[in-house]
Amino acid sequence: MERHQLFEQLERHAQVFRALLAGLSPAEIRWKQAPDKWCPLEVICHLYDEEREDFRARLRSTLETPDAPWPKIDPAAWVAERKYMEQDFGNTLNGFLEERQRSLEWLRGQDHATWGNAYIHPKVGPVSCDLLLTNWVAHDLHHIRQLINLRYAYLQAHSTVPLDYAGNW
Picture (cartoon, rainbow, N blue to C red):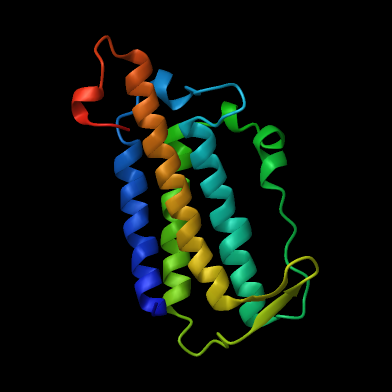
């Protein structure tokens, strides 16, 4: 897939996230299917952090200084450390969307970057710039699917009627 197509997908995904998360009630923002599952607030906090500290930062590092160690991240620990459940949903969503715009502006300015670079990860081996970019798109898709499933489960849990007329989920 061409890079510009991946950039366009990242841009469209921002609009998908905006639409999926528009108008959620305070209860739905923090609703979890199970105690060990994420709610929409935690998902958007994760996306906000990943946008700044994982995908864009690691891709920039690989493009500019592929031999330098990647910035350290710990997404699982961030949930508690960064108090995701105490964050403001609207501010976090807006922050993520602003960061996505920054990412897109930066990506579109990388015409002369060394896209053939790869970072040699100590556990997984070579991680190319194209692998990072494509997995950035895939990461969005994982969380779009997660949010759609959450929205459906919330509707199902709070509905007084069966949802089987809509089809099998």
